[in-house]
Length: 467
Ligand code: BES
Ligand code: MN
Image (cartoon, rainbow, N blue to C red):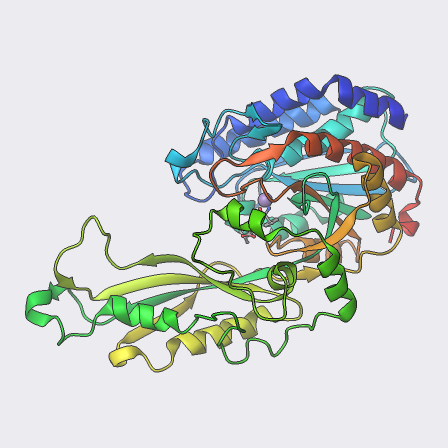
């Protein structure tokens, strides 16, 4: 049965790619609040594709003021484990437009990759999961496991309603194991199972020195400058190649074990490629802390990033002392940091001793997202590792992830500690959130082949034996 499903994937690959092309053609950007009609369309299209793949009880669902979820299931494998499958149909916006080498909304094949906004993050996952489902449903008319598939429409804006959705549909979605395709393979061709995620805590810093701008010829040097005040505050965050200078920041950070350190050191890493990927300027060095490699740094150490700053635009510049300036500081958090404590420490650090005694307001920006970490051992992880070994014809690796997927922990808890299998869809060249986002087509095929094997492997376990 598995072989027939694998053969089906081979024969129907172009069809699957066409489906992905239809998905990426819709500009389902969630971050600007201006594309709700498009998000409705990707939700509907995902529902159609679910029915097409052979899922039942397909519904477009909403909870509260949420954007639409696409949900479908297949429950005709009594006694077999139930697998919860997750992906998201919303995407990041397109900026730095001139850097795109082809239309972001037209799936374009180039150099073995499929380019488009959302091709990797995360519409490719919708196609991959449905491809693996269809592979079984179109051949043996059955699946080795029960599946419940949820495709969210607001992941890129922090999944505000997702936990409410889980609560509202708790019985309907109840599953024994969770599969998420929204992380990376460490390198093209190396199947990677992610066992940790960072969280996020964000704050907005608003600096205010006066009611209105004043001519800088009259007041320059006499009135406090809001932009300089803000940047002097942000300058406190400069960590050079050391730890972050925020008091309390490391109180709860879990130490890397020697075993993890050794495992991270063994993973493939190419500094030049990393430099080139970002187009790092020749004079710049990495900001990594002494004693950590890039993996340890991005997976298991907290980080701050100024993701936005406003004072006055260069275009609209005039000779004024600016009265207001604002920034958003986003902090990635790691095991065992508590979001509330990080928020308090960061707020205290940015609020204290305001330059010239100006007003500094530090307020939470966006909902906090918790980190997640699991022990990648047990029957479900073995099933996944074996499936990936078969699908990629290569030994899989266990990795961390510097990004955040907030629901994994809470959903696993809701399912009484169900294991969560995070299987890679992206790779370091995928440019998620950036210009020329792409999906490696070879790895896309291998992921689908792995999912087919995973369903088979999980089908050999009983629900009670999955954990
Ligand atoms: N797919 C990413 C998560 C990710 C990031 C995987 C980096 C692999 C490497 C996900 O879609 C994402 O971008 N998440 C947001 C979460 C935020 C909106 C709460 C993130 O990490 O910024
Ligand atoms: Mn994603």
